Image 1 (cartoon, rainbow, N blue to C red):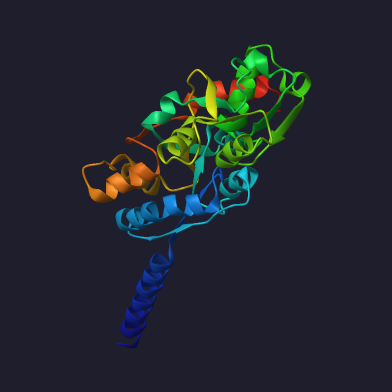
Image 2: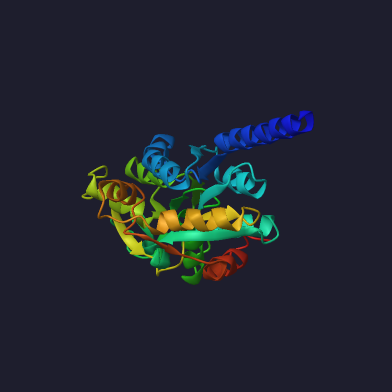
Length: 284
């Protein structure tokens, strides 16, 4: 009887411990800081609430200081899920020895674009930028640096030798502000941020305009570490794929994420980004 009691007590203790561990389980999200912290937090809040319901676990959004910090956070498993641009995914995958898996991307990310903007009426082509000042976003930004730099090089414009000065604003919205304030002659940024600023009338388009739009390329995705259990990874992917605008919750999240829907993605989609990074000397 004594042994039976001890076995029962041990079983109860194990169940309690398992329940406690489950209750404490947290899914940690982060995102590259390509916009102001307040905007990132606003966009994350409804998504966090939705994922908590779908994943049946606590979900936390943890902001990071810069793009490199987002890469290191996922590589070192300090977070479980990260919103990367194409270039930061490539950096994280290289840094981890191929251990980063891109789960889903917005449908828009299959054919993403960058825009070059200016308030100078003399700037009409990329070649016109020679001798002028230009702001990129973050050095690790796909749409705010890597791809604009790549298309400049294709146009026979070397930012490091042909421009008067190159600046890095740190974020897409900051690039718009720098051009609007006349701090630089032109800026390169994410087309979806530009479109959002135009729709929200946060930029005076009678003064600041797009003078070049790049060809399309693959960009943003939600990535996880390969060590995440497959069942959890599949459940997370399904939660994103199930988002649709037929519900108020889905519509709000998709609008904030500037997405029509999420679709599956794979590492092979970002080979073009990797090649561009090598060609531009940004990936060793």
